Length: 222
Length: 255
Image (cartoon, rainbow over all chains, first blue to last red; front, side, top):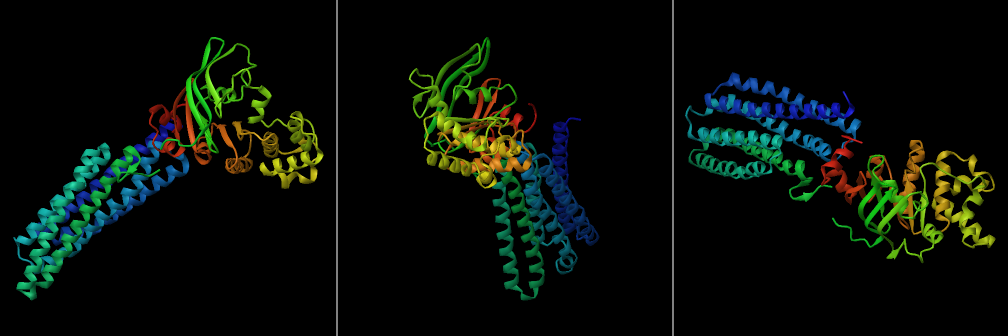
């Protein structure tokens, strides 16, 4: 294989690894929502354990990027792809972390909240939006589709809106019955993590412009 | 980012033929003052031909024919009134292979100035020191100025050639792959020297080393098959080239 062909195949492998990691993070979030919905503490435990896998994928991607930087001295499109991978890998890893954070809360949360609790349902609906943002952000990145990326960035408003609405509901719960503060705080943590997951998806989407044009948030990076 | 710098050299619609072979196709390129402009491209793309045209080194090539306009600070370099020796004093050249004259270090430096009429010993002494200092060679050779230049290392010889070019007080320095025959240490010294030189001189360099162009130049021009494909700030060319051929070349897909 020629040197350039090997380089291209290394870049392709990097892209595949990133897509796979994105899928794993999205899946962890989906599973956390499912565990929350079904009050499944065993499933929650599995999500916490599975986070190691996502962390290892981050190490692997960083290693691939560092090796390419060292050995190929990438320029132009190659440089933009590798530096983008190094940036978004952190955001993807955080999404996985937050899925695990949510899963850690579930065993306690299910003891303080009844099945079919409307605030939990609202949180799950919010979480579905954040989950969809991850999928859309990864698709936009893979396809290098700036329009799709802008849609992801815009979609974060709905997640933020839900966060504030649920937070308001929880504040009212506490005001009505101070004994419920524990249950309210658990769910507040969950929605805060979900809100952060939306932010990380936005961060990923923001790199799509860079990978195409060398501009990030409409400013030249070079 | 457009180049707002006043061009020292301005080529417009420059065409050059070697016999029937068209080596330069309608090249228009401005070289900004006190900038390093790197010319890159695969072998045979016309970059060295373009470089040599800037001080009319191609005039002597049999069968060469040139059309178009090249101006040095507004003066037509092909005009009858342009003295060739004067043009070559104003636009100096350093070649790929160091070519010191087989004489002393001192005489290498004073050869040009003497040709242009400088006779005063004190003046020549001063020229030797300032030129050697300008080429970052003074400290290494000041105690052996009367020794043969051929006894210097390859890197020192190349810096001597740069000093020799500086001795006639040029406005522009042309460099044709000046470090391709040097080891990494000597290459680094010459690159550092170029960054120093651009404080006072305009430099045009032909290089096959992409990293070198990226490290030292302000603007980069990419030539292919006699055409100027793209020219722009070096950061832009190496991060977001506009033309796919530029991207393919700098990222090693051909050439």
